[in-house]
Length: 146
Image (cartoon, rainbow, N blue to C red; front, side, top):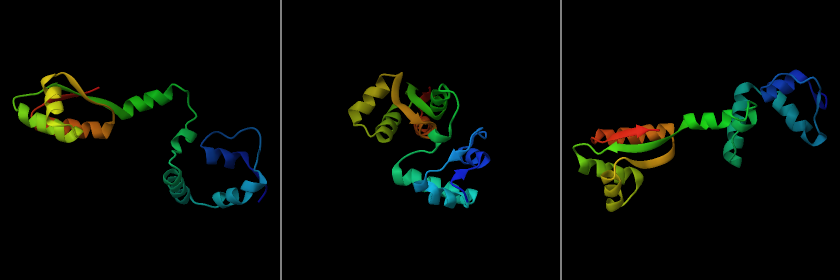
């Protein structure tokens, strides 16, 4: 193998189109690059997951080469704010559900339920927001995701 990656290999590694120039691999990374070139896609995927866990990083940010405006749009789709819009007929059960779900004291939970509409949680992952909504709606409250 050579010290340089072919443009197609570099493009495949980065998930982009092949650049017009060859990429020179520094000597200190030569062995690592050679090993990565021989890996299967499944091995590479596993390696990325190990790096993400080990170093607390996300490879998604590296792979994204789109316009800067795409970042906030993706985040808006993946997060939600949970607002209690109506306490319903079974107000005590809703207070208990809010208290348990948010880890609040009884007075804080009661104040949120009494003060509808009230924002329960902001910036939750979409799945967590749906779960919170389901818990509260099972007790009779009405929740809106924003």
